[in-house]
Length: 269
Image (cartoon, rainbow, N blue to C red; front, side, top):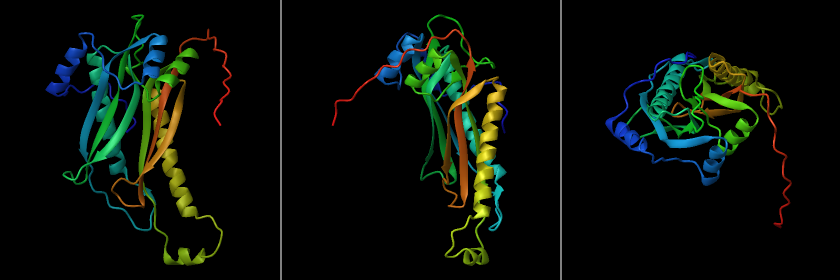
């Protein structure tokens, strides 16, 4: 589940190939704001084009026990593989453009009425290339990916670090229901609910560990911008996906001069 694919899929639609060919002529597209665009230019990168990947994935059925907390491994694998497919296709588009990386990556999940138990997983971002001509691809020879904003990317580069990849870990976990005896036993009391505590704790730990495993495969020295997301999607309140995301980074230079912070006083009321 934590293996990083070595080869990118070669199944881009014809429309995507035609759009990327047009971008190779010099025109670029980007979802960066004006400030983000200028900051990325300032650290020596130039946008090549808006890139994306998509996967419509059917999630299967996995039985769960009403009174038992457990990971639903089939659903975990499905959510992980679907996002990886979308990410890999986005990376393939970036590779077609000759990019060094993709910044501002966003991962979304959409559900449609016509697809029962199916969801579209989308990865989007802006492909960039170093103006120096020096390759900044990651250890696996792929364009790096990062969900950092243009401002955060600029700050990261100023401190001598560079992204290696957007890393993630996921865990779909069924949280056991409380029996009547447990419910009555804690009625009117201030008391910890250990079965809920342990289930949520374990699920988050599994997601975090898997994210760290991906980072280790990239040879990263750390992960920045880590966030934890929790969603029930369409499974009901007691089945939750715990998703851990962050940008794996590596140190490239120790010769760093940090800019002096500027003091700003607001004149607003």
